[in-house]
Image 1 (tube, rainbow, N blue to C red):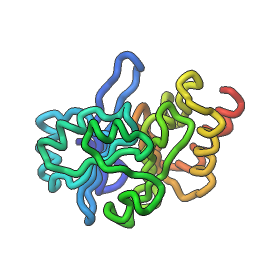
Image 2 (cartoon, rainbow, N blue to C red; image 1 turned 45 degrees about the horizontal axis):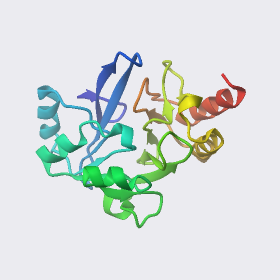
Image 3 (tube, helix red, strand yellow; image 1 turned 180 degrees about the horizontal axis):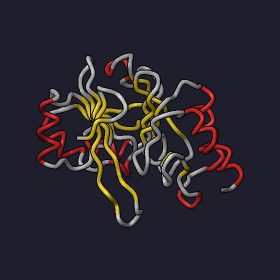
Image 4 (cartoon, one colour; image 1 turned 90 degrees about the vertical axis):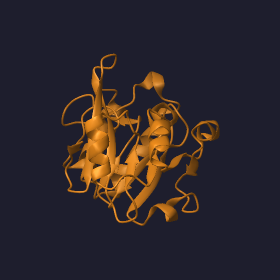
Length: 208
């Protein structure tokens, strides 16, 4: 796996020729138990590296289009699997537990260094974003990175409700303190994450 911007974060990727960008997964080594977000299939090298780092306790899938290799990884690790509460059929298919903004939905079990945020208006209901250690945002589909150094919105044709999507992004951007945005699809942003979210918002509202 590749080292990310912090010593406790790694990632692995897979190039998608249809969309001409990389898909990404994130591994987070943490005292509350190691966690993987939106896991892609692992190479032998990456699987060995993951084990060297202590294996995994939890898998979080941000939305039903990012199920990827979650079942395979669960079966080889016995990790707990979590997903968006607003997709019950998907949760059942994964044998996963529900997550959402309500602290009663798993947040307390997953530790105080993780904040769960529900995003609305994407192509799936209640897509999850994860804030790690208060400064690193991990996103699924709604926020992506088609161009290096900038963030962009899921295409309008795939949005469930653009106004709600923009409101969700504005709430993220206005909170401040986000340094990195690790997107599921495309280029990540490692510095100035809150500013990059505001730039995304301005471009989306201007139709660019």
